[in-house]
Image 1: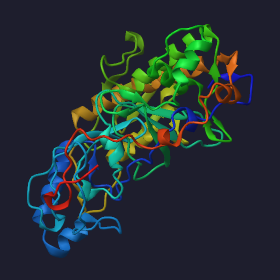
Image 2 (image 1 turned 90 degrees about the horizontal axis):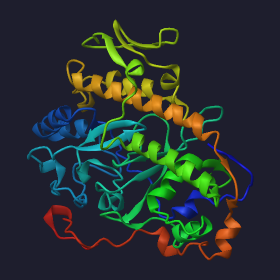
Image 3 (image 1 turned 135 degrees about the vertical axis):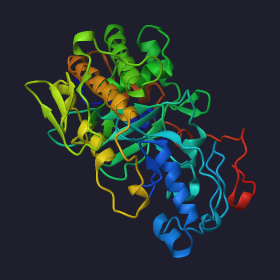
Length: 397
């Protein structure tokens, strides 16, 4: 994060005022690194009867086999009682299951304790979800993550904070910014146009821990702003991983040097050789910066590997997994190493960014940008699509 010359940086909660807690599943089995396992788990569940189905489902106070819930916005899953369900598995969708860990989810409201429908209503290809991360003392790593995928509260691992969508409506409409913020920053920069994505990009590189949890120093220096936005847009591209896939130069690009085993159990990093050792398998080069990349005090690569190889209790739905390590996971691992390597390089660059000519909280108050109206902290009404209620009934938004 950049060095700053003042202590009156505005809170992120005021700059992006609408936030929602991340969806919380309440059970781990509706997510998996591969979609086929989810369909097999669903088939096992609906073929079971009575107490066996209940034991597999893992009921909570929020969800049981007889819970009556609405359809998830934008999804076509059934809304009848799960105790009577016998149909096919809803088509799995891609989600952010943990920091930098893209997995699959069965998008069925009956399986999710707290689904946060307001997030599902605004999830589309234009959306960017910003997720606050736990700050672990003495550790490095990003304070904010950004993803095009709906982020979940991890079932295991560090807790995450609030989710702040960049847009309040589908289609990239109505930025989730303090009203007048973009216009005011543009004026302070000399009249340059400022887009919502510019403010998000700056936020990703400038955010820092503060008394208000996360605060974002702003600048009226055009040169500093341009440099910070450029760094932030690159970080955003790496985090979202859409469009062209990130690549390292030929000599630094990670490759599989020795085949990975069919059932790997151990992951070790050799710093001297810059190699990732997966049992007898070997991937290199993997720089120490990628191996040491942490979020919330947890190594991203270690946690990613554990989520695919950790032991599940026999007889549970989570125990239904691929019998051997899929080739697709190796491809995902190589891309993750690339992303973390490039993000680590960006971290060292953004640390040199010094915020000159600060735009303070007091400035924003004098300009009438702050305080934000309470309506900006609530979700927008989204009335342009049908949502099914429990047992197939209509529902009002």
